[in-house]
Image (cartoon, rainbow, N blue to C red):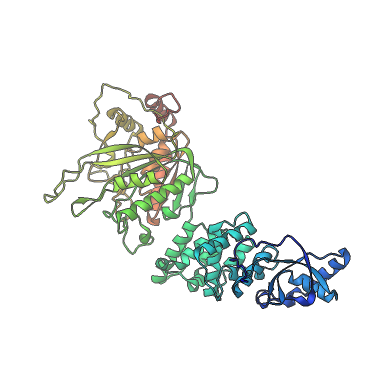
Length: 574
């Protein structure tokens, strides 16, 4: 009669009765000795002997019948203890099924012993076989692997879900392929020293050829070591890997982490916005920024420090938008639930065709769960003329996109101070031009609050804002190698007053010249500025300090009382 077989990876059915068998009928399978080290079990066997003598009882041994012998699946150490005690028979439970390969015998042994194995190395050895990381005679199909993942999850419980079991398997494979590595990923997982997410991050970094980072480089840079010890998060780790490769190519290998500048009213976080890490406990109330132009402006020389991390140089607009969205997600993770994201951007054109960055960004932000609130048009006067060969109308505007983290976002309605005025700028704005040839330096505006008042009076603060732009940008004064991406200090004004609470904190991930920060400080808000290029940091600090010194409490409160509604918040969800 043909015996019934059972695939490994499921709970093994047993007969409901206990049978006494002679010790001479029992046999230790050679597969057990391939998994366990008998010499390591001597003391354990001695303790078992004492326990059996004291209690007069031994738990049944689990066996299956093979020809004229009963092969032990669970209870080899109990068998050896009883044998040393010179007993003749022992209680046994006989499995009603039969393994169909040597590998399956091992699987059965592992399933009975996985949770009770005390040694770390034994657990790794058992799991390596069970997940077929070691060389075996048999191949498993996907459904059998899924059964095994489920079994391990059930045995180890919380934290060992299917995906984490697969990550553990990958760590075993990695160690098999790199036996000299010193990361000890599987050991760290079994001892709960690191999370599965961190191990997955390490494997992704090392296995992705685009990172060009291996264990030899890790010996020198020790970036992954810092990641595993929780010194860096994943974004910072990936950034340090890129920095290491860049500096290795240019002949230096020391990785410099710029120092944050922190004061009571502002924080400057130098570095890549994709890798920014806010000081512990920091919450922002919103993001307000003018993002880099896509493939139009290079904000620094190609070989200058950090230029390889400059957003806006991506090969495809989709990659550019993805990076922008990732930056916004970092901010959202550190933002109050009623926070908003306000992005000033201009579309790009390639070979006369609009790239479509604006609709792409709206779509991707919505996919990530952000609520798209509004699109405001910044209408610019005195635009640069375009060439005669350009086959489209003169582009005289930029977009300001407004998103929120939740439907219940912060909003303070602006009121029209003098409705009799038309929504045009009659006075113009002296901020962006230094028209007096005798003046060698121009810092934005004189009598700043009066100019703010004029701007708010001259605009109905609807979906079109009008602001003059001269060809010379005053923020360029004092900056090294001209900064062409600046925008007026007046532009953030209505957005800060409407969407950022007083004493709230706003983050500009692309600080540039510090315009957003200066406006925020003058409107009694706190600011966080992130800037990629170190050369711009001193000027940003200078601009922020100027914003603090320009703040006039009386002028600000008069401005607020004249233009901001008395209601603290107005829900726009309707």
